[in-house]
Image (tube, rainbow over all chains, first blue to last red; front, side):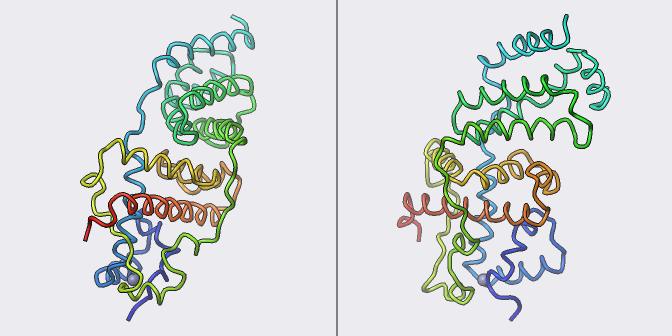
Length: 82
Length: 200
Ligand SMILES: [Zn+2]
Protein backbone atom coordinates (compact mmCIF):
# COMPACT_ATOMS: atom_id res chain seq x y z
CA UNK A 1 0.00 0.00 0.00
CA UNK A 2 2.96 2.32 0.51
CA UNK A 3 2.73 5.61 2.30
CA UNK A 4 -0.61 7.25 2.75
CA UNK A 5 -1.71 10.51 1.20
CA UNK A 6 0.01 13.52 2.69
CA UNK A 7 2.30 11.36 4.79
CA UNK A 8 4.93 12.85 2.56
CA UNK A 9 3.73 16.43 2.88
CA UNK A 10 6.84 17.34 4.85
CA UNK A 11 8.96 16.06 1.97
CA UNK A 12 6.93 17.78 -0.68
CA UNK A 13 9.19 20.80 -1.21
CA UNK A 14 12.31 18.69 -1.28
CA UNK A 15 10.63 16.50 -3.84
CA UNK A 16 9.47 19.40 -6.01
CA UNK A 17 12.80 21.17 -5.73
CA UNK A 18 14.70 18.03 -6.71
CA UNK A 19 16.38 17.61 -3.34
CA UNK A 20 14.73 14.44 -2.10
CA UNK A 21 16.37 11.06 -1.81
CA UNK A 22 15.65 9.09 -5.04
CA UNK A 23 14.04 6.14 -3.24
CA UNK A 24 11.57 8.49 -1.55
CA UNK A 25 10.91 10.16 -4.90
CA UNK A 26 9.98 6.78 -6.32
CA UNK A 27 7.50 6.26 -3.51
CA UNK A 28 5.84 9.60 -4.13
CA UNK A 29 5.73 9.05 -7.87
CA UNK A 30 4.22 5.63 -7.45
CA UNK A 31 1.60 7.10 -5.16
CA UNK A 32 0.61 10.01 -7.40
CA UNK A 33 0.36 7.57 -10.29
CA UNK A 34 -2.80 6.14 -8.76
CA UNK A 35 -4.03 8.89 -6.44
CA UNK A 36 -5.73 11.74 -8.28
CA UNK A 37 -5.84 14.15 -5.34
CA UNK A 38 -2.15 13.82 -4.64
CA UNK A 39 -1.37 14.24 -8.33
CA UNK A 40 -3.32 17.51 -8.26
CA UNK A 41 -1.56 18.55 -5.06
CA UNK A 42 1.87 18.03 -6.61
CA UNK A 43 0.89 19.72 -9.86
CA UNK A 44 -0.64 22.79 -8.20
CA UNK A 45 2.30 23.15 -5.80
CA UNK A 46 4.56 23.27 -8.87
CA UNK A 47 2.32 25.79 -10.59
CA UNK A 48 2.27 27.98 -7.48
CA UNK A 49 5.95 28.67 -8.02
CA UNK A 50 5.94 28.96 -11.82
CA UNK A 51 2.96 31.33 -11.87
CA UNK A 52 4.54 33.50 -9.23
CA UNK A 53 7.77 33.82 -11.22
CA UNK A 54 6.01 35.09 -14.33
CA UNK A 55 6.46 38.74 -15.18
CA UNK A 56 9.39 39.26 -12.84
CA UNK A 57 10.85 42.70 -13.59
CA UNK A 58 14.34 42.56 -15.07
CA UNK A 59 15.09 46.22 -14.68
CA UNK A 60 14.42 49.17 -12.44
CA UNK A 61 11.78 51.63 -13.58
CA UNK A 62 13.40 54.47 -15.55
CA UNK A 63 12.38 57.06 -12.95
CA UNK A 64 14.31 55.23 -10.25
CA UNK A 65 17.22 54.38 -12.53
CA UNK A 66 17.62 58.07 -13.36
CA UNK A 67 17.91 59.31 -9.81
CA UNK A 68 19.50 56.38 -7.98
CA UNK A 69 23.08 56.86 -9.11
CA UNK A 70 23.14 60.58 -8.31
CA UNK A 71 21.52 59.99 -4.94
CA UNK A 72 24.09 57.34 -3.99
CA UNK A 73 26.98 59.45 -5.23
CA UNK A 74 25.84 62.38 -3.08
CA UNK A 75 25.60 60.17 0.01
CA UNK A 76 28.97 58.63 -0.79
CA UNK A 77 30.69 62.00 -1.06
CA UNK A 78 29.10 63.12 2.18
CA UNK A 79 30.64 60.10 3.88
CA UNK A 80 33.99 59.72 2.14
CA UNK A 81 34.51 63.17 0.63
CA UNK A 82 35.14 63.68 -3.08
CA UNK B 1 37.41 41.94 -10.23
CA UNK B 2 35.55 39.63 -7.90
CA UNK B 3 33.05 40.60 -5.25
CA UNK B 4 35.51 40.49 -2.38
CA UNK B 5 37.93 42.82 -4.16
CA UNK B 6 35.12 45.21 -5.04
CA UNK B 7 33.94 45.26 -1.43
CA UNK B 8 37.46 45.98 -0.15
CA UNK B 9 37.82 48.85 -2.61
CA UNK B 10 34.38 50.21 -1.76
CA UNK B 11 35.14 50.09 1.95
CA UNK B 12 38.26 52.14 1.22
CA UNK B 13 36.08 54.79 -0.41
CA UNK B 14 36.05 53.80 -4.09
CA UNK B 15 32.62 54.81 -5.42
CA UNK B 16 33.07 53.03 -8.76
CA UNK B 17 33.56 49.73 -6.95
CA UNK B 18 30.42 50.35 -4.93
CA UNK B 19 28.47 51.31 -8.06
CA UNK B 20 29.50 48.01 -9.66
CA UNK B 21 28.14 46.11 -6.63
CA UNK B 22 24.92 48.12 -6.80
CA UNK B 23 24.45 47.41 -10.50
CA UNK B 24 24.89 43.70 -9.92
CA UNK B 25 22.11 43.56 -7.35
CA UNK B 26 19.64 46.41 -7.84
CA UNK B 27 17.34 44.50 -10.22
CA UNK B 28 16.95 41.62 -7.79
CA UNK B 29 16.37 43.92 -4.84
CA UNK B 30 13.72 45.82 -6.78
CA UNK B 31 11.94 42.64 -7.85
CA UNK B 32 11.86 41.40 -4.26
CA UNK B 33 10.63 44.74 -2.92
CA UNK B 34 7.92 44.98 -5.56
CA UNK B 35 6.61 41.50 -4.89
CA UNK B 36 6.83 42.01 -1.12
CA UNK B 37 4.88 45.27 -1.09
CA UNK B 38 2.82 45.02 -4.31
CA UNK B 39 3.38 48.75 -4.57
CA UNK B 40 5.74 50.44 -7.04
CA UNK B 41 6.37 53.51 -4.94
CA UNK B 42 7.15 51.44 -1.84
CA UNK B 43 9.45 49.25 -3.93
CA UNK B 44 11.35 52.28 -5.22
CA UNK B 45 11.69 53.64 -1.70
CA UNK B 46 12.98 50.32 -0.43
CA UNK B 47 15.64 50.13 -3.15
CA UNK B 48 16.86 53.65 -2.37
CA UNK B 49 16.84 53.11 1.38
CA UNK B 50 18.66 49.79 1.01
CA UNK B 51 21.58 51.24 -0.91
CA UNK B 52 21.77 54.40 1.21
CA UNK B 53 21.89 52.24 4.34
CA UNK B 54 24.54 50.10 2.67
CA UNK B 55 26.70 53.20 2.21
CA UNK B 56 26.15 54.30 5.80
CA UNK B 57 27.10 50.89 7.15
CA UNK B 58 29.54 49.55 4.59
CA UNK B 59 32.40 49.19 7.06
CA UNK B 60 30.21 46.86 9.14
CA UNK B 61 30.11 44.29 6.36
CA UNK B 62 32.69 41.68 7.32
CA UNK B 63 32.31 39.14 4.56
CA UNK B 64 30.57 36.52 6.68
CA UNK B 65 27.94 36.24 3.97
CA UNK B 66 28.05 37.34 0.36
CA UNK B 67 27.59 41.05 -0.20
CA UNK B 68 24.33 40.25 -2.00
CA UNK B 69 22.97 38.45 1.06
CA UNK B 70 23.98 41.38 3.23
CA UNK B 71 22.02 43.69 0.94
CA UNK B 72 19.02 41.37 1.12
CA UNK B 73 19.07 41.59 4.89
CA UNK B 74 18.96 45.38 4.70
CA UNK B 75 16.23 45.29 2.05
CA UNK B 76 14.20 42.86 4.13
CA UNK B 77 14.32 45.18 7.12
CA UNK B 78 13.25 48.10 4.95
CA UNK B 79 10.39 46.07 3.49
CA UNK B 80 9.27 44.96 6.93
CA UNK B 81 9.23 48.57 8.07
CA UNK B 82 7.04 49.49 5.09
CA UNK B 83 4.72 46.62 5.82
CA UNK B 84 4.52 47.21 9.56
CA UNK B 85 1.42 49.32 9.04
CA UNK B 86 -0.40 46.46 7.34
CA UNK B 87 -2.58 44.28 9.50
CA UNK B 88 -0.96 40.96 10.10
CA UNK B 89 -2.65 37.61 9.77
CA UNK B 90 -1.76 35.01 12.34
CA UNK B 91 0.34 32.07 11.32
CA UNK B 92 -1.62 28.89 11.18
CA UNK B 93 -0.56 25.30 11.63
CA UNK B 94 0.31 23.38 8.51
CA UNK B 95 -2.94 21.39 8.61
CA UNK B 96 -4.93 24.53 7.92
CA UNK B 97 -3.41 24.76 4.48
CA UNK B 98 -3.98 21.17 3.58
CA UNK B 99 -7.07 20.29 1.62
CA UNK B 100 -8.27 17.81 4.22
CA UNK B 101 -7.65 17.31 7.89
CA UNK B 102 -6.79 13.67 7.64
CA UNK B 103 -5.02 11.53 5.13
CA UNK B 104 -7.95 9.14 5.11
CA UNK B 105 -10.23 11.87 3.77
CA UNK B 106 -7.88 12.43 0.89
CA UNK B 107 -8.09 8.78 0.05
CA UNK B 108 -11.75 9.23 -0.82
CA UNK B 109 -11.64 11.51 -3.82
CA UNK B 110 -15.40 11.14 -4.24
CA UNK B 111 -15.97 13.24 -1.13
CA UNK B 112 -12.85 15.40 -1.18
CA UNK B 113 -11.87 16.14 -4.71
CA UNK B 114 -9.13 18.73 -4.99
CA UNK B 115 -9.67 21.44 -7.55
CA UNK B 116 -7.57 20.71 -10.63
CA UNK B 117 -6.22 23.99 -12.04
CA UNK B 118 -5.29 22.39 -15.37
CA UNK B 119 -3.52 25.23 -17.20
CA UNK B 120 -4.75 28.55 -15.78
CA UNK B 121 -3.37 30.35 -18.85
CA UNK B 122 -5.92 28.49 -20.96
CA UNK B 123 -8.73 29.57 -18.68
CA UNK B 124 -8.02 33.20 -17.85
CA UNK B 125 -6.63 36.33 -19.46
CA UNK B 126 -3.01 37.03 -18.51
CA UNK B 127 -3.93 40.20 -16.65
CA UNK B 128 -6.64 38.53 -14.60
CA UNK B 129 -4.31 35.68 -13.71
CA UNK B 130 -1.55 38.09 -12.72
CA UNK B 131 -3.95 39.93 -10.41
CA UNK B 132 -4.97 36.68 -8.76
CA UNK B 133 -1.36 35.72 -8.10
CA UNK B 134 -0.32 39.18 -6.89
CA UNK B 135 -3.30 39.36 -4.54
CA UNK B 136 -2.61 35.90 -3.14
CA UNK B 137 1.06 36.80 -2.51
CA UNK B 138 0.13 40.15 -0.99
CA UNK B 139 -2.30 38.49 1.40
CA UNK B 140 0.20 35.97 2.72
CA UNK B 141 1.41 36.76 6.24
CA UNK B 142 4.69 38.71 5.91
CA UNK B 143 6.76 35.98 7.54
CA UNK B 144 5.55 33.54 4.89
CA UNK B 145 5.72 36.02 2.05
CA UNK B 146 9.37 36.86 2.65
CA UNK B 147 10.65 33.30 2.85
CA UNK B 148 8.59 32.22 -0.16
CA UNK B 149 9.92 35.07 -2.27
CA UNK B 150 13.52 34.62 -1.11
CA UNK B 151 13.35 30.93 -1.93
CA UNK B 152 11.39 30.83 -5.17
CA UNK B 153 11.61 34.35 -6.57
CA UNK B 154 15.18 35.20 -5.63
CA UNK B 155 16.24 31.56 -5.60
CA UNK B 156 18.29 31.65 -2.40
CA UNK B 157 19.06 28.39 -0.67
CA UNK B 158 17.33 27.37 2.57
CA UNK B 159 20.65 27.85 4.36
CA UNK B 160 21.05 31.40 3.07
CA UNK B 161 17.48 32.25 4.04
CA UNK B 162 17.91 30.75 7.51
CA UNK B 163 20.91 33.01 8.04
CA UNK B 164 19.01 36.03 6.77
CA UNK B 165 15.97 35.58 8.97
CA UNK B 166 18.01 34.27 11.90
CA UNK B 167 16.15 30.99 12.21
CA UNK B 168 17.35 27.41 12.20
CA UNK B 169 17.55 25.54 8.91
CA UNK B 170 14.79 23.18 10.07
CA UNK B 171 12.34 25.90 10.98
CA UNK B 172 13.16 27.86 7.83
CA UNK B 173 12.46 24.77 5.79
CA UNK B 174 9.15 24.24 7.45
CA UNK B 175 8.22 27.88 7.05
CA UNK B 176 8.99 27.77 3.31
CA UNK B 177 6.79 24.70 2.97
CA UNK B 178 3.93 26.27 4.88
CA UNK B 179 4.26 29.41 2.79
CA UNK B 180 4.01 27.42 -0.42
CA UNK B 181 1.03 25.44 0.87
CA UNK B 182 -0.71 28.61 2.01
CA UNK B 183 -0.13 30.31 -1.31
CA UNK B 184 -1.29 27.24 -3.22
CA UNK B 185 -4.44 27.19 -1.13
CA UNK B 186 -5.18 30.88 -1.73
CA UNK B 187 -4.58 30.65 -5.49
CA UNK B 188 -6.62 27.48 -5.69
CA UNK B 189 -9.63 29.12 -4.04
CA UNK B 190 -9.40 32.13 -6.35
CA UNK B 191 -9.09 29.98 -9.47
CA UNK B 192 -11.95 27.73 -8.41
CA UNK B 193 -14.11 30.83 -7.97
CA UNK B 194 -13.33 31.89 -11.53
CA UNK B 195 -13.60 28.67 -13.46
CA UNK B 196 -14.25 25.88 -11.04
CA UNK B 197 -17.56 24.89 -12.55
CA UNK B 198 -16.43 25.00 -16.17
CA UNK B 199 -13.83 22.29 -15.93
CA UNK B 200 -15.05 18.77 -15.60
ZN1 LIG C 1 -2.78 10.28 -2.24
